[in-house]
Amino acid sequence: MQEEDLLREAKEAGFDNCEILSAKKIQFDHSLRKYCEINYCGNYGNNYSCPPECGTPEEMEEKTRKFKRVLVLQTVTPVKDITDDRETRVIKHRHNQMTWGLIDQLSGKLEDFLPAMAGPCQICERCEKKEGNPCRFPKRVASCLSAYCVQVDKLAEECSMPYWCQGEVAFFSLLFFS
Image 1 (tube, rainbow, N blue to C red):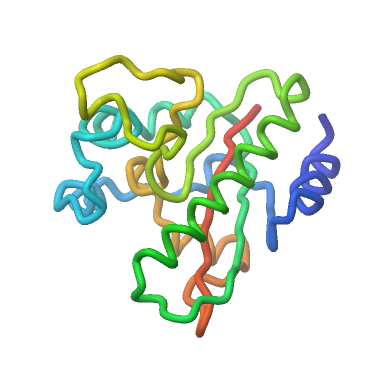
Image 2 (image 1 turned 90 degrees about the vertical axis):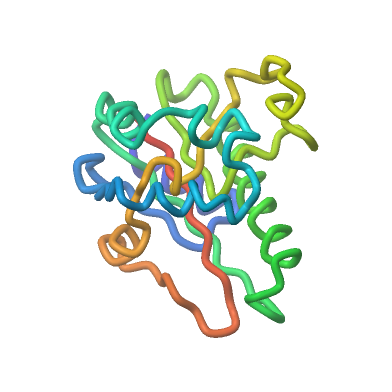
């Protein structure tokens, strides 16, 4: 699939901004894992897509290294209150649904890919990890940018995309491919 077609499909899927970069341009900072470990979102150890289950920072970075290119996807959405966790979670969920919709649309057009989402896997209402059961959708488990220790501020800068937005929230997802 041509990169221009990939960008066109991303725009048609509703993403506000999209860019294709060399995967080597993604910057990682393994010290960011501490934000997962403080368990602010409540998913540390409770979601197959999250640490420690998903892998160490080094293992997560290594997963991306087999890919040459990365599609950066961004939505920018107005919010009433950026500190309202319920409101931002709904927006984040919508962003991730858009990402999965694009991935489904690209099925068969990209041979091998690796998604990284905005926040933890939300395919199931309650992750089977909490009950000690195997994942029901192992081919769709996608870790978040935080689990990968991606420096999203640097990513936004590299792509000339907004990171901090007054009255809006910006979410990113990545699709590594070759």
